[in-house]
Length: 318
Image (cartoon, rainbow, N blue to C red; front, side, top):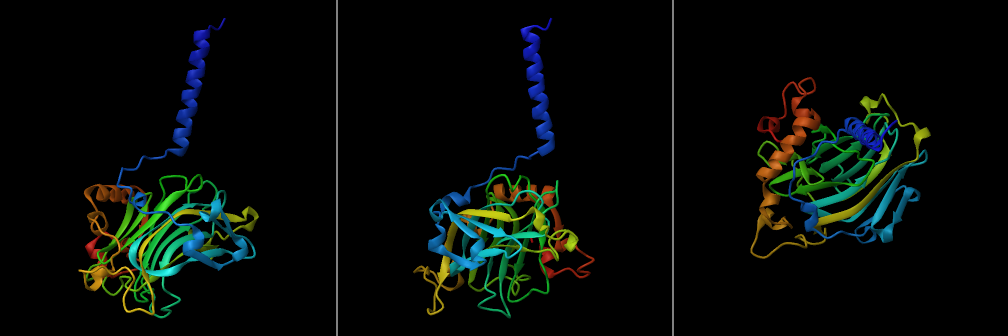
């Protein structure tokens, strides 16, 4: 006869095994703790800061305009754009990615001025690349300056969480010192404004864009896995928009946030503080954790593509 104690031990053992199984299946690593820069800026609502870019029928606004969903279906992708262009600042959005099979799908959060400067545009990219079943979304980062699109400065990462289960923050610091890509406030990449990067460093006002589109030709396994619309429509959701930038008015000689007592390029930096000028020791450790465990491609390591590596690769932290 099974006693109550034996039953309790069996239940506890079963729960322990289930928890162990879930842990092994998901094996979610715990990232290092870093400063939550996203808590230092007010959230924006969509209608006050952004406008539809394309695929208006596939853009849905909820929660009084504080959340926006972009959809990709057979007819169209979709996207939105900031009402203003900005010169330097801190820019962020929380994104929840499409679930299930999403090979070939690209969800992007980026800054660009290609409309204003089609021949010599600047760009800073977060691109989230869709996956096959039982595979994870990949994160691709890239930087272009002054039309330097001949050298793709891609770095690619796996994420340490399920990007489809909840919202996660994707943030950019862009100033005269460096560009920093952050995921959930953890730096994943730093591009220094060095002599080697001088011409390729973004230097003109840029707008903020968010899009979802069909990247069948290249996004997953170099185009071997195109979008399968049988699994669509594909929906990416955005919220917690943060824009702390220097709004640029082309009719004026200077940006609206120039501060007295400062001059030159420094006057264009709308955010101040050591944590925006240079990575702290804590942020450095966090970035090293990400890059050592989750980065699976860097153009600076691709000798088949670049027999002579771009000069900034010698400086590291690209």
